[in-house]
Image 1: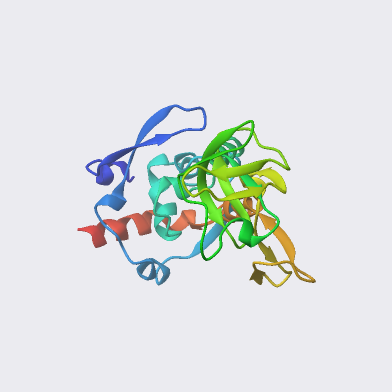
Image 2: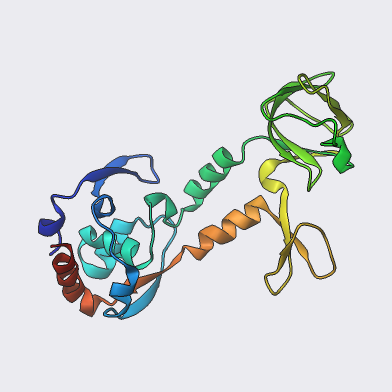
Amino acid sequence: MSSEYFKNFPSINYTMPDGKNIKIKDIFRKVEIEPAVFDSIVEYNFYEIEDGERPDVVASKLYGDSHLYWTFFLVNQIDSYLDWHKSNSEFNEYIKQKYEGYWLNATLTSDIITSSSKFLLGERITSSSSEGNVILIDPTFKRIGVTGGSWSANDVVTGVLSNKSFTVNSVQNRVDGIIYYQNSDGLKRNSSASGFNPVTYFDHEYEHNEEKRKIKIIKPRLIKTIVSEVARLLS
């Protein structure tokens, strides 16, 4: 139904959960249609993506045509295949790569930065038994993010360039660090308070990924009409 019309669109690589690369058509390089155009003519259902379901698999399941995966991207304003819901294995790999390293937590903000001295991004830091590199400086939560090395509480770390030093209060994986505090109404703040619970980077990323699980879909009985309308709008 749609393959003939979209066969001339450019292809891009898509990596499946098992690591295999496949080529799929990418109409978004060529054209962008305002979502409001479709909202005025389309009736939607909602679909909950199962773990590991690729867009083309869902399209085949719902419409009997794997080429219609692009409709999910269009009606949900998804810009990239990277924005599709990640399977458990994809999510874990994403977390591992994005949040590499550790937080070295300090006792005071002044341990990290003062008006006259501060740790520097990219500088090497050393302790009596280890060394690594600074990748993040976070005075709000009194910590620096580092890669490399092996760190423990009570280590005294020193920046090779800045000569800034502090005694490590605690060490944690970066993904386990607090990103903000949130209450039951969804309000966020940078410090603890009554009714506000800590949200870690893992929590934040997990909720964001789960929000992508539920997508709008064009009702199957309307799909032929909508594909024809898309063809008209693109012509």
